[in-house]
Amino acid sequence: MKNFSQKIPLAVSLANFTEQAVQEGLSGLGQVYPCTVKSVGLDGAGNTVVTVNFEINPVSSTGTKITLPEVTMPIAESRYVRLPVKVGDQGIAVAASVRIGGITGLGTGLAPLAPASNLGALVFLPVSNTAWTTLDPNAVVISASNGAIIRTDDGKAVVTIADDKITVAYQTINFVIDGSKVTINGNLQVNGTINSTGDISAGSVTMQTHTHQVVGVQGGLSTITTTVGAG
Image 1: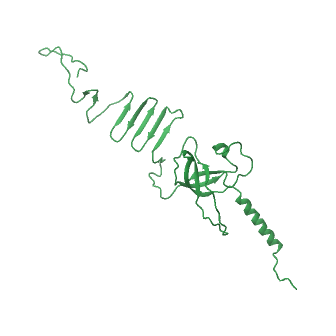
Image 2: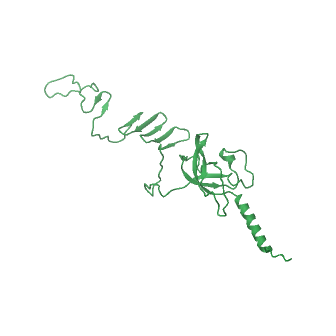
Image 3: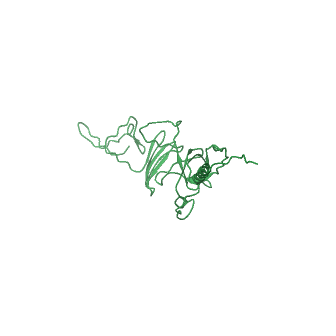
């Protein structure tokens, strides 16, 4: 009895085997996937790391169902500029060549010179969106729900822009700009002219309504000196 079953040529089998081995190897390498921030910080504290959901189709092109876990990772930022990343922000998870937990606080020790697991060396990188408002394409825009804080490492000089006021502080001296006034806590020196359309007060004395007592009154064309600051 003849065997009519068709045999796969050796060349085709080798090509299929090689392709499968390559795909399995690539799947173990670091991947770059779009993602959305689900939570910020560790146990609700801080915002230097995020936990993300991956925004990919759960079914691959070959029909295989893919289930990716939520992954906690650092944010692509430096200690000098901190991003106010919040839940719902979107970006991509970028993979390093080896695990990076030893420098991010999510692990310890030096990284071995070997590929990390495909989701084990990721960094969250925010991406822009066409729905964002462009204020000035030639200017650096810093925007956040609570404003911004610029400070020196020692905390002596701090500029805070909040939604209701602006505060500039240096050590014990500061001035505050709110919706109705400017308040200065400290001494003020002006090297120039001060112009005011309203009254100026110093304690209980105002420039528009203050008076001076005249002493040593003399008749005729005599010149007298008034008291200073008598009100």
